[in-house]
Each structure stands twice: as structure tokens, then as C-alpha cells.
Amino acid sequence: MHFEFDAEFWVFVGFLTFVGGLGYLKTHTKIIGALDARAARIKKDIDEAEKLRAEAYALLASFERKKEEAEAEAAAIIKQAEQDAEAIAREAHDHVADFVRRRTKQAEDKIAAAETAATTQVRAAAADAATKAAEIVLKAEAKAGLGEKLIAEGIADLKQLLH
Figure 1: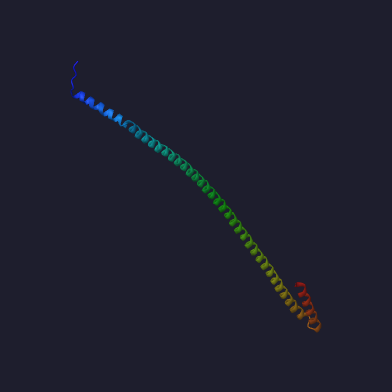
Figure 2 (figure 1 turned 135 degrees about the vertical axis):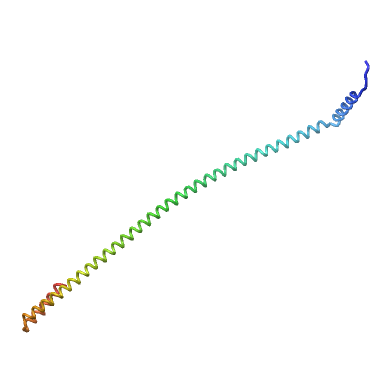
């Protein structure tokens, strides 16, 4: 058997020397340690990202609840405002109706008072006209002193009866 030391042999020897040197310097443990440290750092980053994601979902859910509460509160405020507006409208309508009733009553009272006053004035005028007419008729018929006395008494009695 004959061995030739060609280029391939020397590449193989160089490779074994290189791998042996790496093993002697414990480079493989340093590489494994660096890879493990990188894997731990990546796992830590993933865990932190998952934690942040969970916090983001919780925050999103919180804001959605607040949004729903705000919408419900806004709906309640709108409903209350509508009820208040209806109550104010009813109150205003009642107030106007009461005002119209009072004004109508006042007008009716004024009309009744005017009718009473007019009736009284007409009666007084009629009584005055009747007494003057009676006075004229009685003066013409009774020209004596007794006639004038009777006329004065009759006029006084008539005025008391009419007033």
C-alpha cells in the first residue's frame, strides 16, 4: 500500500487540524453558549411581545366597554332630554290654555259688568224720562199748590223705587 500525499490529503489534514483546534479551544461551547443566549434573548422578546399583545387586547376591550358605556349614557341623556322637552311643551301648552281661560273669563266678566252698567244706565235714563214725562203731565193737570206737592212726593217715591 502506497500512500500518496496529494492535495486532497493535505486539505483533509488541514480540516482535521482546524476542527481539532476548535475543539481544543472549546469554541463549540462558546458557539453553543452564544446560540443559547441568543435563543434566550429571542424567547424573552417573544414573551414580552405576547405580554404587550395581551395588554393591548385588554386595553382595547377596556376602551370598547367605555365606548359602549358612553353610547349608552348618550342615549340615556337624549331620552331624558326628549322627555324634558315633552314635559316643557306640555307645561307651556297648559300655561297658554290657562292664560286663555283667564283672559276669556276676564273678558266675560268685563262684558257682564258692561251689560249691568248699561242696563242700569238705561233704567236710570228711562226712570228720569218717565218722571219728567209724569211731571209734565201732572203739572199740566194740577196747577194748584197741592198738585205740585203731590208731584214732588210722587217723583221722590218713584226715584226710590227705581234706584
